[in-house]
Image 1 (cartoon, rainbow, N blue to C red):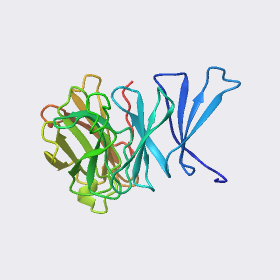
Image 2: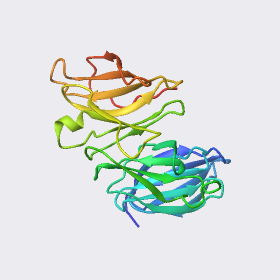
Image 3: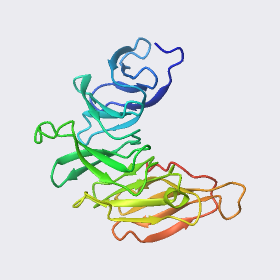
Amino acid sequence: YHPEPRVASILASHYKPEWVVNIKETGQVLLVNYTDPYNPSIKMIEAERFLHDGGIDSTKRYFLVAANQSNRIAVVDLQEGDLAAIVDVGKVPHPGRGANWIDPEFGPVWTTPHLGEASLVSIGTDPEAHADEAWKAVRTTPLPGAGSLFIKTHPNSKWVWVDMTLNSDPALARTICVIAKDDPSKTYKCWEVGTYGRAVHFEYNQDGTEIWVSLWGVASKPGETGEIVIYDDATLQEKGRIKDLITPTGKFNA
């Protein structure tokens, strides 16, 4: 029981007319069927605390959500409507929506970074073709620092991108890294997005040829309020900057 539990995140199921609702303090995932919006039915699934954000796997059947107090990822089967697994990961996972890609050794995986440790953890997500790896932490990729908020990739990209926004080292806080999908044991390249602030959040254009990164600044400092930096995904070269923004954060391609 909690007197004022909060909704940490919500998304729509691809299998049923249901909202998937994460209740932060109680550690419950609610499947809210809205077939009759005046009389919705709710199924409560006990997961782990404290639930935060998460995303679906590549098949859209499984929902993976971070329980950041428990250092675990809860996996919900949206087709069957039940808890599929609980996976131990690193300290304070913070996946955003996570990243789906094909690991050269373990097959389809979903990857989360962490606030509390300098690593990415990849979880196997294919119980049919890769049953031995399914719902297990199959790979840990070290990062230069902790404090990550977001991770991103695209089906047409050879990279997985990650930030370290909340790292206590100012240089690392404005640094981003890419991991090569064909060699995910280590970072391929890391660099500072700017000379100030904190780098945060990634968004691709539709075809995956370029990626946009936000740079947080300070509203009271002219020239250092914030900006969005655009990179060519194939070459990792900078293509342009949208300057003089005030603390830009999420960017979403419709």
